[in-house]
Amino acid sequence: MELKEAIYNRSSVRNFTKEKVSEENLRELVRRAGAAPSINNSEPWKFIAITNEDLLKELGDVVRIKYKNLIPENDERITDTIRNQVTKFASFFSDAPAVIAVVAKPYSAIIDEILVSTGLTHDEMNKLRNYPDIQTYGAAIQNILLSAVELGLGACWLTGPMVAKNELEEILGIESPHKLIAFVVVGMPLHEAKPRAKQSLDEIFELRD
Image (cartoon, rainbow, N blue to C red):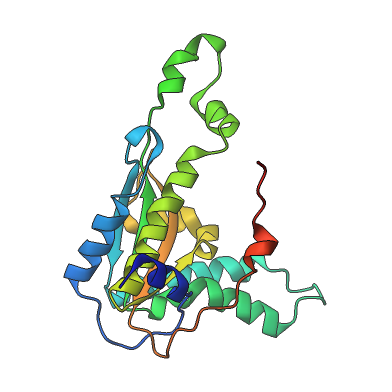
Protein backbone atom coordinates (compact mmCIF):
# COMPACT_ATOMS: atom_id res chain seq x y z
CA MET A 1 0.00 0.00 0.00
CA GLU A 2 1.34 3.42 -0.94
CA LEU A 3 1.58 6.13 1.70
CA LYS A 4 -0.96 8.28 -0.14
CA GLU A 5 -3.47 5.45 -0.10
CA ALA A 6 -3.00 4.93 3.64
CA ILE A 7 -3.46 8.66 4.28
CA TYR A 8 -6.67 8.89 2.27
CA ASN A 9 -8.12 5.65 3.65
CA ARG A 10 -7.46 6.43 7.30
CA SER A 11 -10.52 6.98 9.45
CA SER A 12 -11.38 6.83 13.14
CA VAL A 13 -12.63 3.30 13.83
CA ARG A 14 -14.65 2.73 16.99
CA ASN A 15 -16.29 -0.65 16.37
CA PHE A 16 -14.21 -3.80 16.16
CA THR A 17 -14.57 -7.52 15.76
CA LYS A 18 -13.49 -9.83 18.58
CA GLU A 19 -10.40 -10.84 16.61
CA LYS A 20 -7.26 -10.29 18.63
CA VAL A 21 -4.43 -8.06 17.45
CA SER A 22 -1.24 -10.07 17.27
CA GLU A 23 1.77 -9.12 19.36
CA GLU A 24 3.70 -8.97 16.10
CA ASN A 25 1.40 -6.25 14.75
CA LEU A 26 1.44 -4.31 18.02
CA ARG A 27 5.23 -4.40 18.08
CA GLU A 28 5.34 -3.23 14.46
CA LEU A 29 3.00 -0.33 15.19
CA VAL A 30 5.19 0.79 18.08
CA ARG A 31 8.35 0.28 16.04
CA ARG A 32 7.00 2.69 13.45
CA ALA A 33 5.83 5.13 16.13
CA GLY A 34 9.38 5.17 17.43
CA ALA A 35 10.63 6.18 13.98
CA ALA A 36 8.77 9.51 14.16
CA PRO A 37 10.69 12.78 14.45
CA SER A 38 11.15 13.99 18.02
CA ILE A 39 12.30 17.15 19.77
CA ASN A 40 16.13 17.17 19.82
CA ASN A 41 15.95 13.53 18.71
CA SER A 42 15.15 12.78 22.35
CA GLU A 43 12.55 10.06 21.60
CA PRO A 44 10.64 11.04 24.76
CA TRP A 45 8.11 8.25 24.65
CA LYS A 46 7.12 4.81 25.78
CA PHE A 47 4.20 2.72 24.53
CA ILE A 48 2.20 0.25 26.61
CA ALA A 49 0.12 -2.23 24.60
CA ILE A 50 -2.90 -3.50 26.54
CA THR A 51 -4.87 -6.55 25.42
CA ASN A 52 -6.01 -7.96 28.78
CA GLU A 53 -9.83 -7.78 28.81
CA ASP A 54 -10.13 -7.37 32.58
CA LEU A 55 -7.59 -4.55 32.60
CA LEU A 56 -9.31 -2.78 29.71
CA LYS A 57 -12.65 -3.05 31.53
CA GLU A 58 -11.10 -1.61 34.70
CA LEU A 59 -9.67 1.32 32.76
CA GLY A 60 -13.00 1.91 31.03
CA ASP A 61 -14.92 1.85 34.31
CA VAL A 62 -12.62 4.50 35.75
CA VAL A 63 -13.27 6.78 32.78
CA ARG A 64 -17.03 6.24 32.94
CA ILE A 65 -17.11 7.09 36.65
CA LYS A 66 -15.03 10.21 36.00
CA TYR A 67 -17.43 11.48 33.35
CA LYS A 68 -20.43 10.72 35.55
CA ASN A 69 -18.92 12.97 38.20
CA LEU A 70 -17.82 15.65 35.72
CA ILE A 71 -21.04 16.12 33.74
CA PRO A 72 -23.62 18.16 35.71
CA GLU A 73 -26.87 16.31 36.26
CA ASN A 74 -28.92 19.44 36.89
CA ASP A 75 -28.07 21.15 33.59
CA GLU A 76 -31.16 21.01 31.36
CA ARG A 77 -29.03 21.54 28.24
CA ILE A 78 -27.35 18.16 28.79
CA THR A 79 -29.78 15.40 27.88
CA ASP A 80 -29.26 11.74 28.76
CA THR A 81 -28.48 11.14 25.09
CA ILE A 82 -25.68 13.71 25.10
CA ARG A 83 -24.36 12.45 28.43
CA ASN A 84 -24.31 8.84 27.25
CA GLN A 85 -22.73 9.73 23.91
CA VAL A 86 -19.90 11.75 25.46
CA THR A 87 -19.17 8.98 27.95
CA LYS A 88 -19.34 6.26 25.29
CA PHE A 89 -16.92 8.08 22.96
CA ALA A 90 -14.39 8.36 25.78
CA SER A 91 -14.72 4.81 27.12
CA PHE A 92 -15.48 2.53 24.14
CA PHE A 93 -11.84 1.50 24.17
CA SER A 94 -12.66 -0.96 26.96
CA ASP A 95 -14.41 -3.20 24.41
CA ALA A 96 -11.60 -3.01 21.85
CA PRO A 97 -9.09 -5.81 21.20
CA ALA A 98 -6.10 -3.62 21.99
CA VAL A 99 -5.14 -0.21 23.30
CA ILE A 100 -1.75 1.44 22.99
CA ALA A 101 -1.11 3.87 25.84
CA VAL A 102 1.26 6.67 24.82
CA VAL A 103 3.50 7.68 27.71
CA ALA A 104 5.64 10.81 27.84
CA LYS A 105 9.18 10.61 29.16
CA PRO A 106 11.11 13.68 30.37
CA TYR A 107 13.41 15.29 27.85
CA SER A 108 16.09 17.96 27.95
CA ALA A 109 16.30 20.49 25.13
CA ILE A 110 19.51 22.15 24.00
CA ILE A 111 17.81 25.51 24.42
CA ASP A 112 17.36 24.74 28.14
CA GLU A 113 21.12 24.74 28.62
CA ILE A 114 21.67 27.81 26.45
CA LEU A 115 19.09 29.96 28.23
CA VAL A 116 19.63 28.70 31.77
CA SER A 117 20.99 32.13 32.74
CA THR A 118 17.69 33.80 31.85
CA GLY A 119 15.92 32.09 34.72
CA LEU A 120 13.34 30.47 32.44
CA THR A 121 12.32 26.97 33.48
CA HIS A 122 12.05 24.02 31.12
CA ASP A 123 8.24 24.26 31.24
CA GLU A 124 8.33 27.97 30.42
CA MET A 125 10.64 27.34 27.47
CA ASN A 126 8.38 24.51 26.35
CA LYS A 127 5.43 26.91 26.32
CA LEU A 128 7.37 29.57 24.41
CA ARG A 129 8.26 26.98 21.78
CA ASN A 130 4.58 25.98 21.47
CA TYR A 131 4.93 22.62 23.19
CA PRO A 132 7.30 20.73 20.86
CA ASP A 133 6.95 17.65 23.08
CA ILE A 134 3.20 17.46 22.42
CA GLN A 135 3.85 17.89 18.71
CA THR A 136 6.38 15.06 18.98
CA TYR A 137 3.80 12.66 20.43
CA GLY A 138 1.35 13.64 17.71
CA ALA A 139 3.88 12.63 15.05
CA ALA A 140 4.36 9.23 16.70
CA ILE A 141 0.61 8.69 17.00
CA GLN A 142 0.09 9.55 13.33
CA ASN A 143 2.63 6.87 12.42
CA ILE A 144 0.54 4.36 14.36
CA LEU A 145 -2.71 5.44 12.69
CA LEU A 146 -1.33 5.25 9.15
CA SER A 147 0.50 1.99 9.82
CA ALA A 148 -2.72 0.45 11.15
CA VAL A 149 -4.36 1.13 7.78
CA GLU A 150 -1.43 -0.43 5.94
CA LEU A 151 -1.65 -3.52 8.16
CA GLY A 152 -5.37 -3.92 7.51
CA LEU A 153 -6.38 -2.73 10.98
CA GLY A 154 -8.57 0.06 12.26
CA ALA A 155 -7.48 2.60 14.86
CA CYS A 156 -8.70 5.63 16.76
CA TRP A 157 -6.75 8.34 18.58
CA LEU A 158 -8.31 9.09 21.97
CA THR A 159 -7.72 11.92 24.42
CA GLY A 160 -11.17 11.79 26.03
CA PRO A 161 -10.06 9.18 28.58
CA MET A 162 -7.37 11.57 29.82
CA VAL A 163 -9.92 13.25 32.10
CA ALA A 164 -9.12 10.30 34.38
CA LYS A 165 -5.39 10.50 33.69
CA ASN A 166 -4.33 10.24 37.32
CA GLU A 167 -6.44 7.16 37.94
CA LEU A 168 -5.35 5.54 34.66
CA GLU A 169 -1.69 6.18 35.46
CA GLU A 170 -2.10 4.54 38.85
CA ILE A 171 -3.70 1.44 37.35
CA LEU A 172 -1.02 1.18 34.65
CA GLY A 173 1.82 1.82 37.07
CA ILE A 174 2.96 4.99 35.31
CA GLU A 175 4.94 7.02 37.81
CA SER A 176 6.21 10.61 37.75
CA PRO A 177 8.00 12.11 35.89
CA HIS A 178 6.42 9.90 33.20
CA LYS A 179 2.95 11.01 32.07
CA LEU A 180 0.09 9.40 30.17
CA ILE A 181 -0.60 11.38 26.98
CA ALA A 182 -3.21 9.50 24.94
CA PHE A 183 -4.71 6.16 23.97
CA VAL A 184 -4.71 4.65 20.49
CA VAL A 185 -7.34 1.94 20.06
CA VAL A 186 -6.49 -0.81 17.58
CA GLY A 187 -8.40 -3.74 16.14
CA MET A 188 -10.06 -5.32 13.13
CA PRO A 189 -12.88 -3.02 11.95
CA LEU A 190 -16.37 -4.44 12.41
CA HIS A 191 -17.55 -2.57 9.31
CA GLU A 192 -15.78 -1.15 6.28
CA ALA A 193 -14.04 2.02 7.39
CA LYS A 194 -15.12 4.97 5.27
CA PRO A 195 -13.15 8.20 5.68
CA ARG A 196 -15.17 11.36 6.20
CA ALA A 197 -15.14 14.08 3.59
CA LYS A 198 -12.42 16.65 4.21
CA GLN A 199 -12.12 20.32 3.36
CA SER A 200 -10.98 21.02 -0.17
CA LEU A 201 -7.40 22.01 -0.88
CA ASP A 202 -8.50 25.54 -1.77
CA GLU A 203 -10.05 25.92 1.68
CA ILE A 204 -6.89 25.01 3.59
CA PHE A 205 -4.02 26.01 1.29
CA GLU A 206 -2.47 29.44 1.03
CA LEU A 207 0.67 30.29 -0.93
CA ARG A 208 2.70 33.40 -0.24
CA ASP A 209 5.40 33.79 -2.83
